[in-house]
Image (cartoon, rainbow, N blue to C red; front, side, top):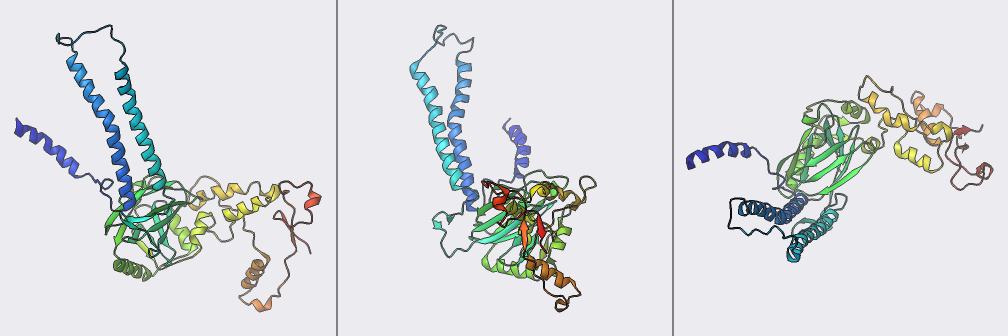
Length: 393
């Protein structure tokens, strides 16, 4: 009988051997603290759940109909001591859970910079943070290292015991950036930036992926995360810089188009303004950036002509992704300064700037919306503002 029972448990052991318990055995301090919070919270709840389940079985057995030895008191309906136990124990557990989760929520806030590398080792001025800009694409991950001027697709590396500062966004739809061994997941959303601060404490190769369904290629949206020693990380940087490709705005627009199961690729150099352009939805040159539009709106807006600005800014991604439905490719043109316009015009005339005279294009005045609190349009007539632009010749 014992042998047959062991045989029955063997298939279960085989199935469990394929489970990955990385969440309960992480390699990063932030993930370890999150693991501890999960375990302690579960144990506190089990202090109530286990006795209740045990007492349910005990009462059902003791007071069964066939047990004539059990005390039978059909008129009993109240016990002050029992009421105190029933209500006091859960209340204490809830208080402990509330205090624990409140502290954990603030200490493990992904926007909060970490204050320790591992238990007993605080972050000092000698620990320089590694800056990584993350872009979720369809269906791949782009990692930009601004301090090194390099980028990689579907591969991320970081030195052991060095703080990592992630700035995360998305090109189209919402995704979720998640490396279980490093830290908890955090969402990546277009035209928004989220942050994550973490540290990897053990060298090794780990798996990262998107934890939020984002379309047909979602299942292949995985990447490798390497925790390396300082020497190995420098070698990885040198290897990436030896690549023959560069990531410009034009090459990014080609990379941005939907594709599945993309191989790892490296870029030896990156346009330094690329991440900001991705975040502000203005990778195409000449397109108005979101932060520029917000600045104009904060100063009074472009009047009635600017009402429809937000529509092409938000929905031009359909054409960029190659969709056969939706609006055609369109966007709001960027407003340049007079000096920028003159320089662009000179550069476009056969590359000979000396043949084109410089004109003074400075007398520009706005006739847009009134500033908040303005008494009349006449009161604002003599004040320059951003609005519908006209050139006074």
